[in-house]
Length: 52
Image (cartoon, rainbow, N blue to C red; front, side, top):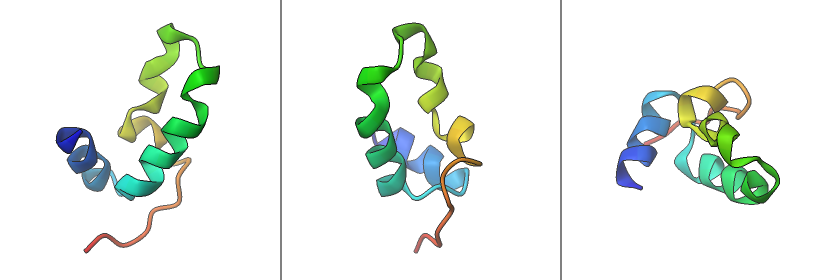
């Protein structure tokens, strides 16, 4: 998880927003499409907020 949070930050995505997005939608996604939830694939979808 630490690595995914760091990757989210590097891609301009707030880790909390990314995790919330994934947890709300993962049960509706086919297993072969899980890669759609990687932070770099969601960078355009999630509004980036400043990370301190």
